[in-house]
Image (cartoon, rainbow, N blue to C red; front, side, top):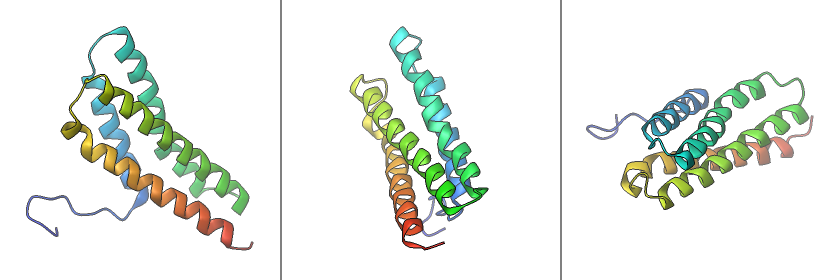
Length: 125
């Protein structure tokens, strides 16, 4: 650990996606039981867990184009998750402080995947 009480930084992207999905599930299970919150929860659980699953598929891609396509799906789902989290914050279901680290992880994962896609496009098969 770099600082006392802080979790060590994870370099295994699959583990980060799994942790992210688990944290998203925790948020969804804590939402109020209103019609709107249930709708957002259903959407969030799909978009927030999909990156882990699609990243797993990308690791088994049969060609560079297939890898890029699957990583673009990961990016799409992360962006959808970000919007859903913003709506949840706007509705005051959670405080900004409570969701700050999850939103930050979402942003970091977007940046990593975006760079991965760009790098993959630069590499000639």
